[in-house]
Length: 278
Image (tube, rainbow, N blue to C red; front, side, top):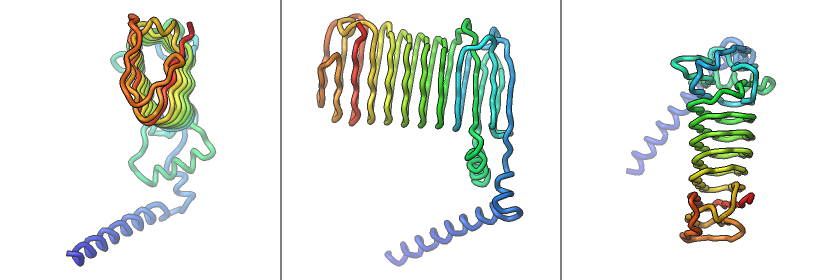
């Protein structure tokens, strides 16, 4: 049996080496590194849209810098984005701004070489009177900044990187951080769901009815408008520490208060701190 496993492992190793050799040949045959750099090209983009035609905003960004800010008109600008890898479309009321990665490893390496000296920048200008039915932001890495966004449903997902945001308004807000750092201020929401798998979140918000915070690892520090008496707090504390209104809890389940609003706090190894602005 051991001999059979040795043969299987040897064959697997040979296949891996053949795959690496094939990729190396495809990369460097023709022009070497120079050819690799030219596999993909950069481009710029600038397009305005009629705000009344847009009900939904969907953004998928890979790396670089993403900015959403107030403007006189609804406009999308992009610099140093990959040609044939950047898409901006308006269909059935949904404005989609998307970066798409290539499945080719050669294209991926070419992209990395280009982006070492050319940072992609995407800027979306939103009129102050625009209130979206839904805004869905999927940010993979890099830096993101939001300065003013109104939506009935707001969903932000960040895989890694840094996000700063202010002047956010939503009926339903769902925010997820896999890793990295988030700092959000002046968030107004009827309901708020915050999840942090890792990384650090700092958030200042006015929540009307329900706030849920789930931290697997990392830290989350929240400042909520009102007082602790406004909430019924349900705390499910794991190995990390949960601090609510100056009192700390760990390794157990606790219910506090009888307020009209609901505050649900749950953690694993991470920590949660909730203060109230009064």
